[in-house]
Structure formats: C-alpha cells, structure tokens
Length: 79
Image 1 (tube, rainbow, N blue to C red):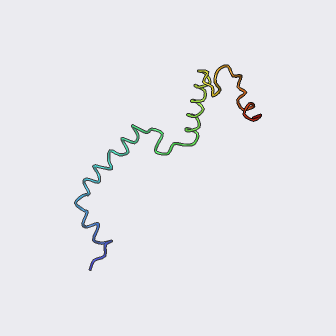
Image 2: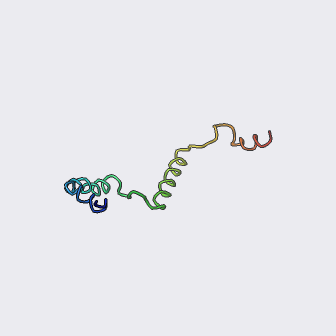
Image 3: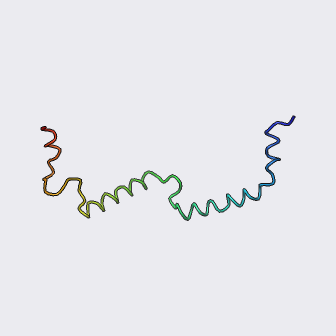
C-alpha cells in the first residue's frame, strides 16, 4: 500500500501545465487591479480615510441637521 504523500503528486502530475496557466496571470492581474497589494499598508488606508474626511469637510457635510445649532447632544443629556 502506497502512502498518500507519494501517490498524490504522481496522480496530479498531468495538471502541471494547467497550474502554470492558472498562476501565471495571477500576479499580472493583481498588479493591474490592486497596485497597493492584497493587504495595503496602514498608512495607505489612513490616508484614504483622511482624504474622504477632507472631501466631506470641503463640501460642508455635517452630522447635525441644519438650523439646530448642534445642541442635540446637550438636549438629550438633559432629558
């Protein structure tokens, strides 16, 4: 009886060419579609968050509804 460690590589030897065809274009696609990599550095993620916050500030987007003076937190705390 053969061990599976010796048997499996021989069994799948005919798929060697397909492995090259499958994993060959993978780095090319990765470099094209995700230039920052699979796991981008924390500074890249933080920079994107800061850029989004800056855009919101420039557009005047605010969590408070207009005209209330921004005292929702104080009003809720008194109730």
